[in-house]
Length: 238
Image 1 (cartoon, one colour):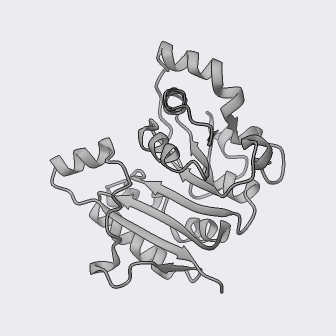
Image 2: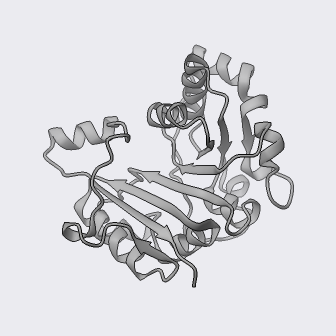
């Protein structure tokens, strides 16, 4: 996607990194077969909130995952929570196509996909107080100091996420980069609409949930002796 397609107006942070990559034959067939049913392009959404009840065919709590990658974790989590309407937003087309293949294999009915910028999605198409949860697992760490400003987890973005959470709903982040984890903790702790669910744990880090699958990024981090950290904050009334 071009910047014009992705960014109808100038913004300082976007939820993605432009990546190339062609789809495999299987991914291309999955895209042709299932995209019209399971997916939508964020820049092509009509003005106003997405009609999620009609899209999912039911009314249920909505959980948004930002950055679903190749979909292994996303598909497993959607399978484990059939009571949720699971919404994944990602810019990488082969990743979304692979997620559709996984959804088919697991016979998922509670998963829908969006291709585009999560900032646009949240700002223009998700009503305040409407989400049961937001998950952002292993976002691009932009490890060089001069690139830290490109990181997704910044005060303005977290304020936007918090505004879309229902009272008591959670935002769950995970990263294997220590510096980014510390930045996440600082940003989330400073947001008045959020409260740490684990303030008494060492450092305020959440215990690693057993239900969160080990991603390829986390496996690589373990091999490189980097510690993955989880942060779970909940929306409070202010």
